[in-house]
Image (cartoon, rainbow, N blue to C red; front, side):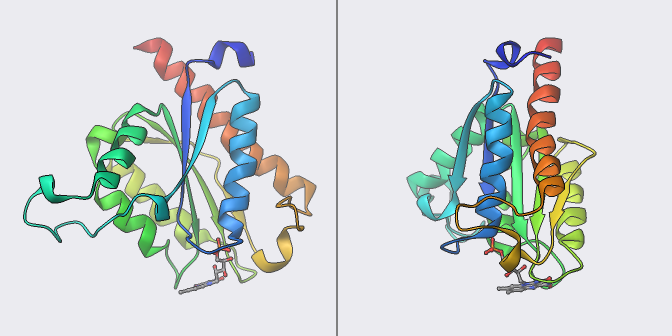
Length: 190
Ligand SMILES: Cc1cc2nc3c(=O)[nH]c(=O)nc-3n(C[C@H](O)[C@H](O)[C@H](O)COP(=O)(O)O)c2cc1C
């Protein structure tokens, strides 16, 4: 599929790390650059910019900060969603789960999701990815089969946010590209 066919596709990436210099953030940038090359409009959503609160922590939804509604609107508008998370204690990050718990079928049903995980250890972000896949399915989204895990995160990137490993770069890019391609297929079927 040519990039020009995908111009109406909007892909957002939600970063499950708030850390300055986050490797999850860097990995999502690589995936998003591939999505953009495939013709999509792309945006990286940094959860620190949305004043998020915990699900159920206010008496009614109308009391949520405006940021919650801004985040929901962006994800609702998206055809494809990249979820990126560090491996935290054998799962994905709480900040990402808390953000996902503020959303639901309105934002995710029938959307295409791509997954990117990073881990400090050499085993990779396998648990984070597996659990994110389960959450994506619970939200009735289509999680693309190929996901990517970046182990040894503190040594994996150079100072410019590029991965040292060319094969890993190709795999991260493939996730971004697949999300655009499958989102375009879904879009054309509607
Ligand atoms: C609370 C916490 C739990 C972690 N748990 C794991 C873990 O179970 N396995 C692992 O390999 N790395 C673990 N790490 C290391 C992170 O996966 C690693 O530092 C990663 O790069 C953080 O992502 P970021 O660079 O995007 O902030 C943990 C880090 C933190 C802060």
